[in-house]
Image (cartoon, rainbow, N blue to C red; front, side, top):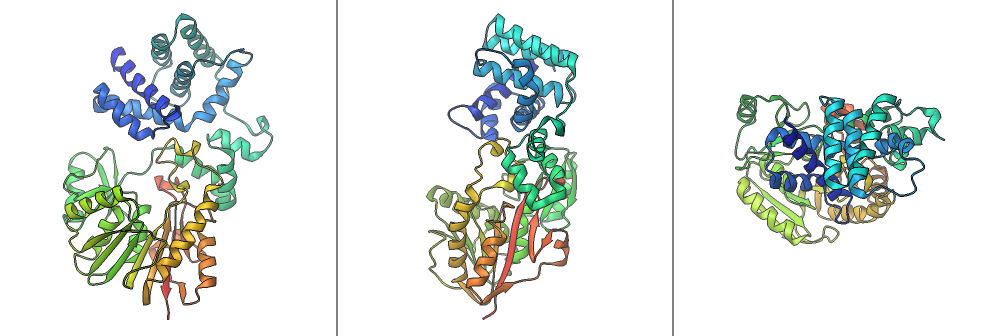
Length: 441
């Protein structure tokens, strides 16, 4: 990578970080897509910019902890652009493999010169060089008042997230936090209405990627070694392995009437339609008009001719009874922190309690549309008990006509108290809670 190319990739990374933490609060991936396209970065430089931007966003709390001694005593705060540039420099020195210290300092100072003046560029140069000389140690427990603060800084998350996950996952906490700081799992869901799994696996593998079948979901492939996008013909779509588990557990059958609530833009809708082999009726309910229009297009292009989109509220029960209902409820999204670098800094510890009220209402509405002997799968991309087991236990206490359905044996590694709990970060997966219920009368 030449000096000009390096500066271009770092300039894009800086723009992404400023977009994320600026007044518009853009999502990191959306910001990168726009900035990299405008800069006309090739794939290699885009990958460098993405690693630098996403990594520095995730590691922001730890980076600031490293910087604190070097900025102590300053009467004025650094200009925002210089502060972000300094964070990018620290990330390269402390976290980014393959970047020599000399190159990291030189290019970061060049970036500071473009966005500041000689004095601020000199400050960036001095701090980075002192950090190289000092080689400051990683955080230690004795540096903090309590264990949760130590873990939260060491893995760069808000303390409330470390505290909550310690309660939920106990001894696995450090592995989870390390996992969400690493690259997330890349998986594709094959659309059986358009292609065979083996065919897609061979095609992706021929491009140089390593491809393996999911041990849990038959239509899911795990892909390493090459970045993928959705197939233009919708033969496959990017979708995490854990996100595909809810439909797998629902196991929709050809000829059934299936209801999907909160259908969104249609990843699970296409998966359901493919499982139904185009036979039976699939009703997809979505409240947002723009998403509903996008869903109609997706279903049509995916070949899901048996699916119909209904613009409606998932908390309102209306329509014919179904044999199978999927409720993939809106949630806090705490299980997908590793997939969205900025998410950890935008979540609220109170969101789960607030959302649980709506989730319970949606579950009641779903139950009212299940025919005797039919089933519901409830799913959220969160491991907060308030959105998961507490919603289910409250529902079962109010609706004695329903009971839990035993999970397929292959899901035993994730079984907890009769439900499915997929921890975030482990093997790159997203975190999910999934419950399977049956109406017995």
